[in-house]
Length: 300
Ligand code: GUN
Image (cartoon, rainbow, N blue to C red; front, side, top):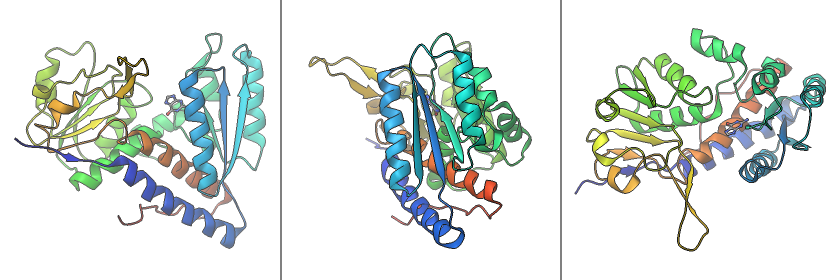
């Protein structure tokens, strides 16, 4: 009975944050600058509130300045755009993140496009997405960047690897595919309209699931020995009413087949915030015209 290696994203992210904190401390002593991250939350979505609180906490733990902008669920588009314009102008703010989803009356694309490209630490601005596609210096979306770090740590050189990315969102699927192409992988993006989805997945040396459907990927969708990255965070009901977080992959079955697999929770999730801090550090360096450090996690 084969059991996959567990890819410990929680530990990797903690080691990355330690390294980021050391770089932040050095920027302070060498250049007298402290990276500043502004997180904008409109409305009271409970999951978003938890994410936003964690982003602020971890930014401060890394030695950065953190600014939280809370707006009511009834905020108008003009008010939100005004807030972003103010943050764009503020030299103490190096990174701006607008937590998604936004209230119904707001057009997310207009909001994303109003963020200064150099402060777009989510990497969602179309100019950053375009730079990623054509190979320029982009802000890379945090979740795909975190996945790539875990995959490289596990697999090493990715040239020629067959990768299937399940999901085509602007936040994960599309930028993930662009990043992997940059690593010389053979990339397939599969989605809800893909024919013979299980067969496509079975061809993958590396399978990345980002669809938001609990346990959608079955054990027999996985090629023996493959590396499986589970981006899904789905709450399923439990008898005690508290619910439980599970991924897009049937973990118990998949870990009998895969070579390596990320758990949920404790896999990709912690990497997303660590990469947000990394992007904020990079943005601050670029804005101050100082070399952006190459940040590697401290050794295990
Ligand atoms: N909502 C869910 N994931 C994300 C993310 O990575 N960035 C932002 N801004 N909102 C999100």
